[in-house]
Image (cartoon, rainbow, N blue to C red; front, side, top):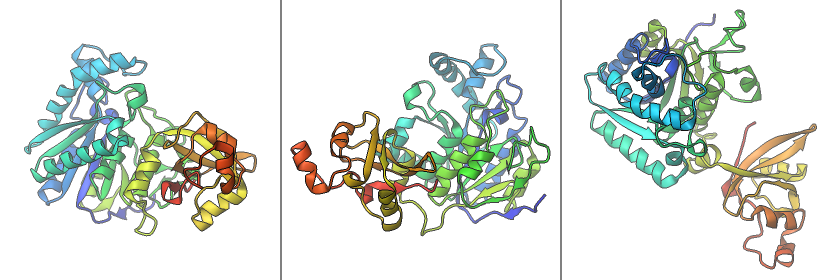
Length: 380
């Protein structure tokens, strides 16, 4: 096994703890794995570091409060909402017992990430809590989240929190030693990767689902979270939260698991483009020819109607859409952007030169479909 890496310098960290660690026996909250995590948080705060905790486990705590055991899978949204409402106070009480410092509950939904005004409000709240030397404990607000407006897993939620909090580091505590080139539960000879500097299709191909019944995520959602965080320049570490020695090593400044390196300054996405790529819901797809794809990628051009060969989805002006090109018989994403024309109008002007837009539609608010400032290119 390759030796551990040095942990990059950091001042503010988001620590994510999943249900598999909070409720390992699926019988409600347990301190079995949380004591070492709490020790890392306490020592970090004592050293002057700022910590934000993202914790799952409300539904598991709710099930236990009702005398029910087993995983919370297969539940309807109303059932999850009710169980989360029952279990969230118990989860907070459970964590609060492990810290001398005051703790604060912060419940977020996808709407808080998607809408910039609510994003800023959440950012300000967490900033004030940190300034007051209080430990923010974040969870998704399952009591009000609907299927359309839920993040769905706390791996991705932790990445959103890391971005809105301007964290230097995201630590995802799992029940495996790090990121492997195959599922180590199914492939004993799988190799642990100590460093991942680029998250691409090959990395996603190595990620499987969750093997733990109480968990809603899996390795894929951890890679998704790492991609969101590293796109914003935030180093992300995946460690085994069931191993106290690994948490102690992290406190000493080494990475016992896998380090996903954050983009450097020249490749880091701006706050707005990160929001466009990772928070705005995608309403449809625009397909372009190879020439347009090359112009977007190599020249930083805006997307013009002449390069469009197809449209999919009932999107409107101002919606976010993916831009895709056919390559070797498959559709490859070039980027994601905010369109200045709805799908119906685009179907009428696709393939036309910009000067012909007004003749086709009777009006021409812009000569481009997606301005380059409203387009973020994707690496995959």
